Image (cartoon, rainbow, N blue to C red; front, side):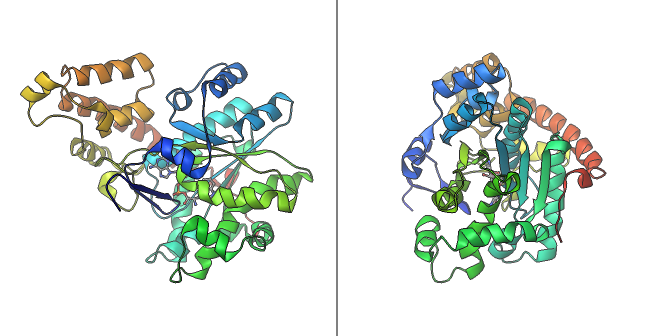
Length: 374
Ligand code: TYM
């Protein structure tokens, strides 16, 4: 892969992602000021992740807002592939989903694709992916979703409901289409080839249950878009609306570039990390700083490549003016990397302590959210 290129698929993100180019490659639409204005009008404010264009791309989002304005409720659908503990990158779309649930009073279907991770990740047994599913569900619940409006399910435990829908999808997706979208080859196991139909199923479930077409909005990072291109292709053939999407960028790896990855623990902060571990990872993170304090003072740093600055920008500095000041102070050399790391570590640790307390409480509330049909 030449250095200026990048790869984004549901199973691999590599290289320096050019998000503008991705919009063209994937054929999505940018989130523009008109859409931001509509959010402001409908919800009273524009949340950080939209203001800062962290959610930067969409499919049919204007249609979802039109439906809402016309009094037609939409349903939210998102999920997680339970291959390990949850990291802060995974939380990002869920924090945004929670904002959407609160602001639009929307029901949420949350899918845990234990089947996908069993099929995809060689050392993972069914027992392990089921364990991670329940572990990851605690993070979802800890974020404060409304139990009356949220259902969480594992594919293998909700299979009577999902499988018949997945079959309808599978029947309409050829191997050649799946290969073109996902890049499968002859060594791909056959489970992975048809898996996308399971990820499509929850997009149609609200309509099947209601007995009429229900608009669905899927918040996720852009890596999941290929699945939903397939879903959207088959939707009209099955008589349903195409699900709309809102896509986020990737929360960066602590070592720079790429996205935070659960398979490389030093690149990520997990919701289960203890405070010392989180502080150590932040202390070792890649920054945009100069080799010496003196050079930093004289030449300034480069916040746009700095993972510490990105963390503040994406999640941990709510105040826009302060985020701007941090950037300026870095550029002019008024700020040293050590100060930024210390300030960020304090915020991350405060977040983790609070989240871990809520995770513990979530253990008693799992059954308020989980649904099973077998
Ligand atoms: P998974 O487990 O890879 O990721 C869960 C969610 O987190 C997003 N994500 C990220 N967002 C920001 N920064 C990152 N570094 C980062 N890494 C991952 C993903 O886009 C996703 O939204 N097959 C899916 C599970 C799934 C799903 C869904 C996801 C089933 N149905 C519907 C979204 C919507 C998966 O393995 O996600």
